[in-house]
Length: 255
Length: 314
Ligand SMILES: Nc1ncnc2c1ncn2[C@@H]1O[C@H](COP(=O)(O)OP(=O)(O)OP(=O)(O)O)[C@@H](O)[C@H]1O
Ligand SMILES: [Mg+2]
Image (cartoon, rainbow over all chains, first blue to last red):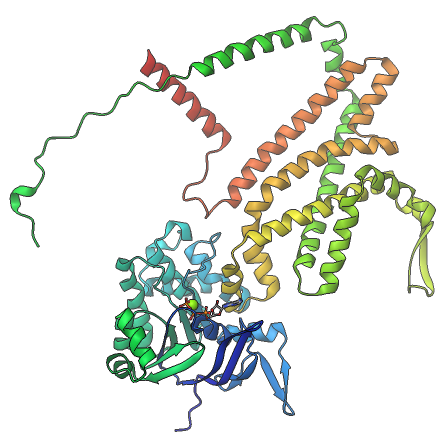
């Protein structure tokens, strides 16, 4: 099979000062896959996600998105940093959804969604609004277009955040614990939207503690601990029959 | 689990509306009496005082040189604040930049301009002609293409505006910086992840949210600036205070002149305060679930609540 993986990590290392948080991550995410990342708190899941869209710089190894090096350019065997403008350009194609939503509080739901298309892609206002309304309908919030984030529930905010990321028509979506700040009864709505995205064939990397979602929707699952990949495989296999004792210990706590 | 049918609460109708006797505040009544007496004494002094000449106060209030002074004061305040705000935003952004040269330069600017009295800076800009007699366009240390006399180029008004504006920029920079730092980092992260550039993130996402923190001290700064402009009378620029002083020294109506210009300052600062209130209200959209009341709405509510008290007590 010769298709290019959407994300390829080779021995990715990342440290904050003296502390090494990622100690050599190797993995591949294929186009159209729902790739789940699980592991205990502090294992480096968020850090790895942030490296993928270059919110963090990696210290060693190679990280490719859609065949292109993240944040650098390789010329004559030497790495050159990309200028901020080019990094920003590449980030358009990678959507990110945060645990704490991070909606822009001074803009309505609709404005949150149209902001990037109009500012970054220079899409005409009317067209951006039309597209935003379609996205809001898709996440079930067409009637909340004029609400400010403070006037929405957590689950609604997170769905607007997903719509905002989708408005840039990304080829890859990163989810960092999208449901862990939500009340239990609101989790379902967000997971339903993500399930819909998966069915549409979106490539997604999902950091989550929702093992039910991972088992049901995930195509591949990686268990991380202490900055390394401990175990990986199909979610059903890893979750029902973990090989490594650290995985077993973690799963016995969360399941 | 299902509840047995008879567990439903029996319908006893809506309970009676609560009509409680409000808590009494005897302290308030004492305060009313004390303040009323003091106010009466002050009013008596104002009406009977022989130096207060209310008719003269009225005349000075609308005297042409005073009105021109009011115009000058407003002009100076507006221009100095524009320089202060633009400069302050620039300095704050420089200060927070990762480039050590920019943040260092900003630090030194703030250090110098905040560390010396504004009156000294005012004199400095006025007498800069002695240090730099000619200002020209050309190559530094090389040939000059055109040049002007400093004193022709920088008149009294320009010197005053520059002095006040550049001094204000140093203070405003710190206000803006605090505002920017008050915005959650997640906001800039979300903006970056959508592909917005640094500049777009700053202008469209971070600064509008920082405004909520910036506006209240900015209002204070503007009001303070309006009064600080009176310092420029020290370099003989004719503004409101100077106009009042001139009349006082010509006519010896010192107190009426002071009262008249004080009324002007109060009037202007009051209008600014009202303006500040509405700007704050605008930038609080999205953070409050409901917009705060306008002052007029507040007054009406207070009056209504007063009526309600009366009703309950009486
Ligand atoms: N900016 C930073 N400076 C220093 N250390 C950091 C920084 N960001 C993260 N870390 C550290 O890196 C480690 C990994 O953090 P990370 O947020 O990636 O964990 P995580 O797996 O996402 O955990 P959680 O499930 O709690 O979100 C943690 O020990 C954390 O303290
Ligand atoms: Mg995390």
